[in-house]
Length: 370
Image 1 (cartoon, rainbow, N blue to C red):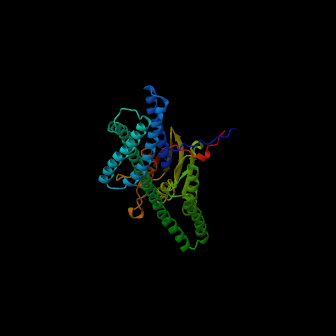
Image 2 (image 1 turned 180 degrees about the vertical axis):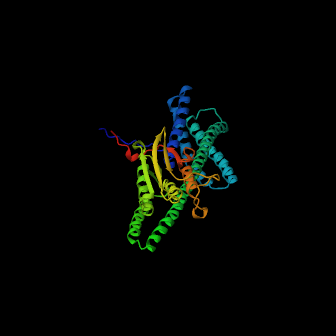
Image 3 (image 1 turned 90 degrees about the horizontal axis):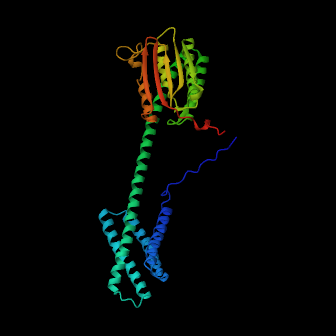
């Protein structure tokens, strides 16, 4: 039995902006030194000519550190101030580096015939090119990081909005279920059936304890969802006794597949309302979950009446329902899985079915390394 070693996820290069800056700063100027130094040696210059190149590189490295401090302040200003002062900063910095370069060159080569102004202009052209490229890269990287940060914030806001929508849809179910259950308990109390009322309260407490433990946006396994559904059905069995006949068929291959918590409860509640309640003999309610390729197919069906000509299930007045059941489930599926889900209703002479297909996402805790 082998033990799997968890992989360390590599951090993005710009996860630590300060470290990324120093890495780029050092690598960039080191590359500039190697490029200029190799060019100098290739032109037949002695090794001593690398000294001015080294001094110029160190000067550019130091000056751009000061420019970085100034640019951090300028990034927070109005665009006209940012760009105007930035251009002036590049010119002044290039002139300073060019002055130091020309002074070092003239000091080392006292017998050179190159005039001071000509030497300065040549050094200024080179330094302005390097520092200008450094500044352009600095602003480009900051622009990229700003866009990435805004994209991350937008994604975070979208996730928060989706989670809020999921939470609202989940919370929408609880008052609907509680109203029906508490109404049944009240009826039992009025009929002085205190033992049954107490038993129903106890089962209701267990059911609500489960719903409070799980986050409204959490996903649970089908196995856990079925156990919760059985808690709910125990409560309803107190009302309907043998008229309510539930059955379950869960394929072990999908028992650990994940779905939004309390997704099936309103479907069973609708089946009880439209199939069990209006029929004296009650009805059968079945819940099945089977693999369907890369998806899980979940079917909740009953033996009650199907849809009538107006597309509604008969026998239950509109005033007795909230109308949130099926639309609620459809919205929760869209929020949780987007286009990777399907929701279908089928009505036949033998009853009514709801067919749901969702991606087969297995619970990670069920994966054991062998």
